[in-house]
Image 1 (cartoon, rainbow, N blue to C red):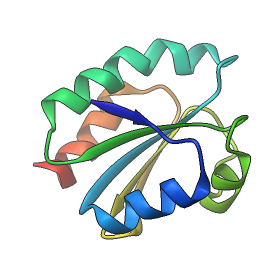
Image 2 (image 1 turned 90 degrees about the horizontal axis):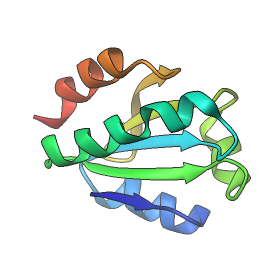
Image 3 (image 1 turned 45 degrees about the horizontal axis):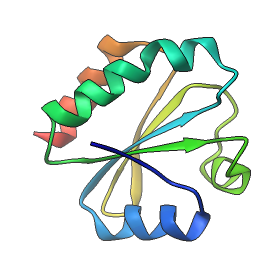
Image 4 (image 1 turned 30 degrees about the vertical axis):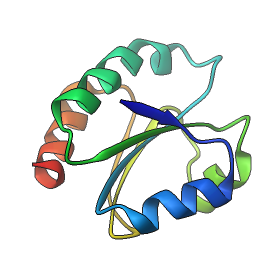
Length: 104
């Protein structure tokens, strides 16, 4: 299940307190973001050893800035609080390849 994150405090707490976190930085106006959203949801059910969260860059811009996100969608993978992987763009195959490396 994908959790919607609404504050920087919540984001920081989640990435620090979970072993593997997959983050979807998206925007409501972004067509590719909407296209890949169902796949991200599907991956959250398939790879249940990871925590999946979504952050709307317009609602929580400080987190997007903190993470260095400049394109949507951007997917970041954190392990024990450290960023270990990044996928930019709506590429479900590439995203799943990265998730498999860390969430199995």
